Length: 307
Ligand code: SF4
Image (cartoon, rainbow, N blue to C red; front, side):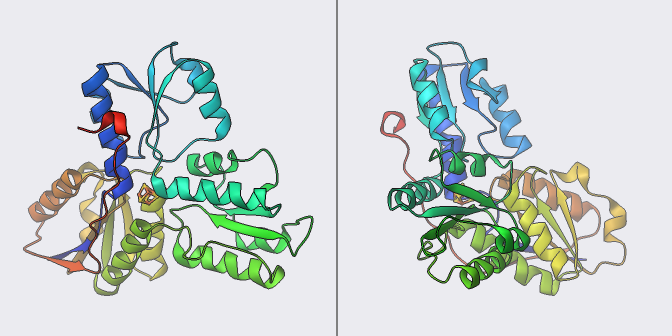
């Protein structure tokens, strides 16, 4: 059996930065370091950081006064930021700069008096954070159906932004409907779906043309990992989201000549390696890589945490 690895796969610049922020805070301030929400959506990353003294909480109410708290890569609404400061918590912000860019777009559109439509998935922390950048005038659009139904005060004064980890094709379908309903709608010049999401989707799309089954390494709450699985499945190829080698079933490889592996932006390469090792035990002999893009972006740490 042959195996193809997608490239790019796994950690993106925003995830690298978020994890490093927690690690540096632990080094500088010692444990416990509180992290509001999973810093990135990956079980291995979270468990590793827990073992080193990070305490993950969903609400600031769970954090003692004067503690150090880190906001996750997904970002937070303004009310959360304000509450943390009013509590005297020492905040380090691991929000990905590309999420912050979307936050700033929302604020700018609202300052211009435009109704804002956020294309994204309800309940995802990034969506909650983006909705929370302004007090009013922003609505969530989750689907093409929503795009047909959404109402705004003035159809000539409307703008859209998107969650960074959506499927490019799915988001485009929603944007097309919004543009047909609101011809003057404003939107980000280069889109809000981030380069890492786009690159991983392009890479897995190519992989799916060559493989009979594709394993996406990532946790079930990882938005971009789920989108990778959906893209493979939409091409009629078997796709499985696996958190690690223990999730793989040998029956998934029956009759398979070529299997593919990719990883969501929050999945560590060490876990990908353990998945590869398992597949080697089950008969993979040739391993090749399909490189569709090179990534060399690096996001800097907050000044106080720089080495
Ligand atoms: S997937 Fe994109 S938006 Fe999310 S952390 Fe990575 S670079 Fe940032």
